[in-house]
Image 1 (cartoon, one colour):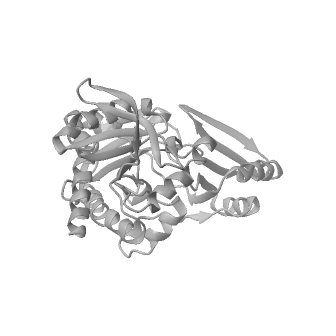
Image 2 (image 1 turned 90 degrees about the vertical axis):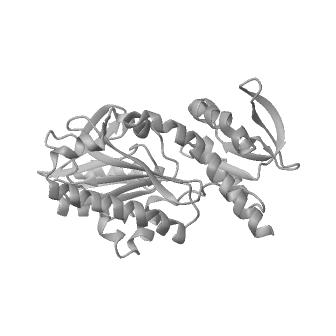
Length: 357
């Protein structure tokens, strides 16, 4: 029997999703286990984790060998979780261990990979690695508005908008559902940046007008996965609409979810044609290009911005996307989502068996 191991630091965060996958594993002659990378004993390569007991419909603690197939749902955002990343990197290099998806590099590296593609590079905002606080100030004085983003991160956290007006710098950032604004003179702004840049690596991008007529930020979320034949398909497209005058349209910042079909009514037929042509181009080319230039993937969340001139921008790409947008706009799709990791795992096992013959 095939075993699919789900890597998670905290099973309770996605327990329903993991449990529903495990309930369907029997249909594929498979069992599902769940564990944290820290639960691997290096000397024996045995794992202490949770195995799903189909007969009792619940998870039970169990010891087992490292599974051959792994679905990584760990998020390495906090210092305590970052310590476990080398273990996962070791697993990725381990013979006869296969990940459904191997993840993506940081935002700057992704930007570099996409910029090498003739069609895709047109959708990229200019992105620059931050070197010094003075560089940010000099650019800001010229451009008047500038976005600062963590090179690694998700959920819209750690994003700053800087505006330069009458010799002062206004700093805007989102803390949960609250928009916080502070004003600095140039010297104080440099001190603020000096402290900030010591904490992590940042990139800058131009500020794009990605708001609707009510001044609410919004973006399109494309949810892509590989099907049972290993082919990329688009599971759905939804719109995240943030609060008026807010900085981001992430759900953690209080954004609402709108079905794409409903949202696109505000555009002219010609504009819809342009938008949908971009969506099709990105969803058809981007996953394959990332796999060809980086590593194999299973699923992607792609965030697309549309500015007030109807220009299309590729904002963010996530190899461990959430499912809330998709489930809100199309609840019945949950059954497809529960089967997808099992189907793709079966496909990988078939390919590996074929290679060994």
